[in-house]
Image 1 (tube, rainbow, N blue to C red):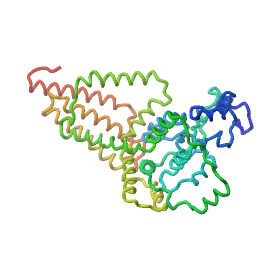
Image 2 (cartoon, helix red, strand yellow):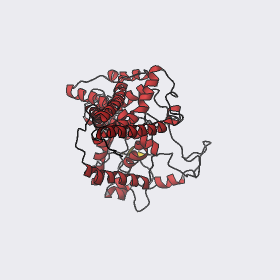
Image 3 (cartoon, helix red, strand yellow):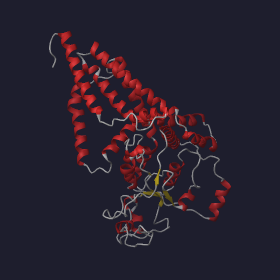
Image 4 (cartoon, helix red, strand yellow):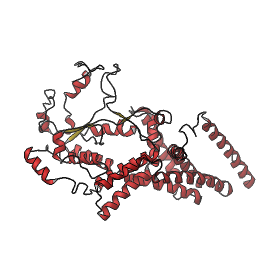
Length: 446
C-alpha cells in the first residue's frame, strides 16, 4: 500500500513505481522463466511461488544525517560512499546480485530459512548470509526511494532509513577493518558458522517446513557478471595492498633522490597523456550519478583506509593459516572498543603523512643541490608525494584534532589562502631554480 505524507492510503502515489514493479526484470531469467513470468502479457504481480519469484531480499542505501563532518568538512572519511551506492550497486541490481549490508534490508523468510538463518561467526554476517543465499539460487534487488517517484512531487522521493556517522575517526577505522576482515573471511572460505547452528533444530525445522530453493540456472552472461561482482565485493582488501606499497615507494624515491623506474618520455607523451585527456572528456560527456566532490572523497579514502583494509585481510589470513576458531563472543568483543578516541589503525596514516612531508623538503634539498639540471629524477616523486599528502590530509587532520581534543573547526582554510600560498611557493621555487642553474651553468635556462 502507498501512503501519502499524512499516512493515509493514496493509490495514485508513485504511479511510475507501480508500473515498473509490474514488469519483470527479464535480464536475469532464463527463457523458460520468462514464459512463466508472462513476458508477453506485461508481467505478473509478486508471488511466493519459487518458480516465479526468486527474490530473496531488497537492499536500500545507507544514508546519514546531515552533520558538521558531512556538510562543512566535505565528508573526509567517505561515509557517503557515493561511488558504491550511486553507481556500483545500481549495476549489481541489473544482475540480481545486490549485496546485503547487514542493515536497511527487507529479507524473504523462506530464503533466509533455506540457508539456516543469519550466518553468524563472521564480522560481515550480512554479506555472508547474502552470498550463501545467492549461491542457493536466490536473487536480490537494490531499491532507492530517493530516486523513485515523480520528481515534481517533493514528498515522492525520500531516503527510507537515515543513520548517524561514526563518532570518531578511530570508530571509522575499526569499522572499516571489521568489514575488510569479514570480506576476507568470505574470500578465504573460512568455516565461519561451524558449531554455531543447532543442527538438530534445523533438521526438525526442515521437516516441519520443507524449503526448496529456486533453480540455480542462469544465462551465461549473468553467471560471468556474478563472478565479477563476487571478486569486486570480497577481494577489495587485497587491492589496498597496492595503495600501501604506492605510498612506501614514493617515500623511498624522495629519500633516494631518483626514480626507481624508467620514465619513457615517448610513452608519456603519446600514450599516457592522451589517455588522461580522453578519460577527462568521457567523464565530462557522461551522465554521472555521482557528484564530483563525492568522487574526490572516494579517491582520497583509497589511501586513508588502505592500512585498515590490509589489517583486516591479514587478520583473516592468520585465522585461515592457523585454523583458529574464535568464539562468537571473542570475535564481536572488539566492537565495545569502538567508542575509544584513538586506534592503532590511525598511526600508519599519521606516520606516512609526516614522512612524506619531510620527504618533500628533503627532495627539494636534493633537487637544488645536485639534481637541478635533471629535474625528471626528483620532481615526479615530489608531485606524487604531494598528491598522497593531500589525500591523507582530511583524515590526518581529524585524527590530530580528536587526539588533542580540538574542535573540528580548527586547522581549516576558511579564507582559501592555500591556493595563494601554493602559487607563491611555485613562483619562489621557479626563481630559485633559475638562480641556482645560472650560478652553476652560467646560462639562463628559462
